[in-house]
Every structure is written in structure tokens, then in C-alpha cells.
Image (cartoon, rainbow, N blue to C red; front, side, top):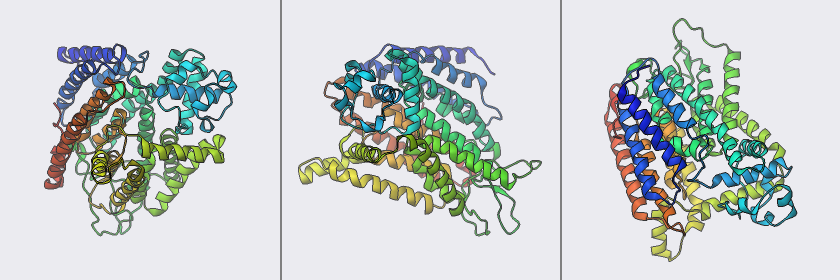
Length: 513
């Protein structure tokens, strides 16, 4: 572990910035939020741009720093988000024996049930969507219930207990992500792109968003997939179902191999390796492969049961695992998710969750990109907001694009397809909160693209909306955010397409700082 005065100075400065941002500022104080955050991003930029091009072991000082930054926020109030209020509301319903999917908060606030479940007027006043049924999946509800039970009537204590599973998941990611990168033949220090990212630290641990739990489960699922070996034909060596060009090794910290269907007759003609096993390592037995497949599906099922978004990755996995294994894998994920939903199952659950998701796409608007352009065209042509119509079609276009990436974009690696799928989803979304971007940051180390890091820096300006009581967005700031991200993304894509596979590891590392 290398400790230098410069590193110690960066650690102290960054710690102070995170503490100030988390403990002292409200989201209405935009100038202070912006200034301190950009200072933190500047320090992050200097640190990740000084990472070595190759490394055999993760930097333990940086891993310890990532842990420290998160632990410092354990007692912080989630000043930048009020989602925690709905988490505790649902949790209190759950621990008092009521199904949180069946009740609208506004219909309960003055009822006897609210008194029985300790659903106080103060807690109700903190809710940001009291007229919508909850949409949080069952594992999330379990976390909510545990926090409400342990916190009791104390709102602050409940918030801290909400943060504990997120913090534990983030610590797991700090430990597992470099190991996964290392087993991919990549620089394990690339994990710092995620673990030291200010947006990730402040929004997940600081503001109590469960994307941190989702990311940990997804990384665990990918870790287990490396154990699955697919026997190829024609005497070709056994490979992992997500195979890598072993010629890259540690000399390719920025890029996994670009593989195309070479017509060799392999069962999985296009594969991105999670781990080319050493020569002295015996291949996994069929039983071992099945256990790994089931374990991975369980972990992804837990991710889906925390947030539904990982479902977008299933078409990509079907493409790489092959139809037989892919459908089996997807079925297992569905079974795990269904079992966790089982205690809440009713006709009303399906109707209520579907209605809230439908309203989400048709009513909520925040920090959007493509949708805002369509909305302005709609005002110009139709004279009114077209979200009621467009909101139905944007998810359809998103699913079509992901299907194309999964089954038609044959020259792209799995990591790039996943990154592009998430980018497409958020580009067409009507609502893009800052913490949504953390998922893109988590995928970035597995690709040559760094535009998610630029986005993670600029999406913070969306907090300018909260300066006004009516939450009026400054569309000039929104346009600046997306124009900058688009410019960097297109530049990286152009360089990616121009580069030869052997040189692709040189793409995109220095776009911040």
C-alpha cells in the first residue's frame, strides 16, 4: 500500500468535502452544492487519471479510502432526496401486518390504520408521491420493514438502518469489483472509477438509494457466471460462456476483446470471457457449471427484487449464454423474483403496481433529454404536452433497441452492449434522477468508454431545479449537461470504431480532469 503526502492530502480534502456535502447543505442550496461537488470531482479526476495502466493487485490505499468515504456518511441526513420517507412509510405498514402495495398514502393518513401503523402526519408530509401506490419490489420492502422495526418511532434511527444494507453492499462491491476485473485480465484499479466516484458515494450511501444493493448483486451474478464453461466443438478449447481474448491479459486495462463470429463452429460464436482459466486449472464439472448458473440467477433475481431495472440485461445474457441456457437462466431469475413477491401476491398488487409504473412514464418529468426535445416539438405541433402519448411509446422503442443490441450488434462485447442498453434507457426516459447514473458508472470499468464519468459529474447540476418552490427546471442547464455528455460519447465512439482491436485499450481513459 503506497502512502504519500499527496495521497493523504487528497484523502483529507475529499473526506471533508463529502462530510460538508452530506451533513451541512440542503438541496435548495445549489451554489454550495455545486461548488463543493465539483471540488470533489476535481480530486476524483486527478486520482483516477493517475492510476497505473497495468496492475496485478488493487491499490489497498484507494480501497480503504473508498470504505472511509462511505462510513463517514453513516449518520448523515439524506438531505438531497426525500425518497427515504416512502421507504419508512412502506416499512411501517409491513411490520404492522399490512400489504404496502394495497394502500395509497393519502387514503390512509387520517384513518385508524395509519394510527395503528404509526403513519404520522409528519411522515406523510415528507412523501413526494402520496397519490401513487408503491412500486418498490419485495426485497426492497424487506429492507424497509427491517429499518422500520429496528428504528421504531425514531425517524432518524430508521434512516440509519435503511443505510446499513446499502453500506454493506457497497463494501462488498469495493471488495469484489477489483477481483472481478482482475479475473477478466484487466487492471483491478479500474474499480476506482466506481468506488471513488463522488456521485456514487453521495447518492447511494449518503442519500439512501438502493442502486448500491442492485449493483452488488449484479456484480455477484457476473462473478458466478465466470464459473460456467461452454464446451465448444471441432476440438476448440473449453471457454467461459462470456469469453475474453486471452492475448490481451493485463496489457488491456481499458478494453476487453472485440470478437466476431469467425465461423469456427463454436457453440457460442461471440463471447466475452469472464475468466480464461490457467493451464493448470481443471475445467468445471457439469455439476459445477449448473451450480454456478443457479447461483448467478439467484443473485440476479435478488437484484431484480430490489429494483426492476436489471431485467433489461436478460436479453443480453440470453444472447451470450445461448437460447437453451439463456432461457433457463431467465426462468430461474423469474422464479426467484416470483417467490419473493409471493407473500404480497394479489390481483390488486398487479393492478396497483402497473398503474403506478404507467403513471411514472406518463406524468413524471425530470432532467430528460430526448423526451424533452419530443415534448417541445409536441407543443409546437399539437399545442399541448404529449407525454400521455409519447410516454407509452418510449419504453417500446427502448426495448426494441435493447433487442437489437442483444441479437444483431455482433461486433460489440457484452460490457459495451450493457452500457449502450442502459444509456438508451436513460436517454429515452422521462425522468433521470442523479442516482440513476450510478449504474452506468458501475459498467464503465468493463468498457473503453468514460462518458458515464462525465455524466456523473454534470448530472449534479439537475439539483438547480430545487432552488425554486415549484421545482422549475432550467432547461439551458439541462441542455448543457446532455450536449457535453453527447459530445464526449460520440468522440469516444468514433475513436472506438477507428481503432484496431489491439489498440482499443488506449481509448477514453482521460476524458475527465
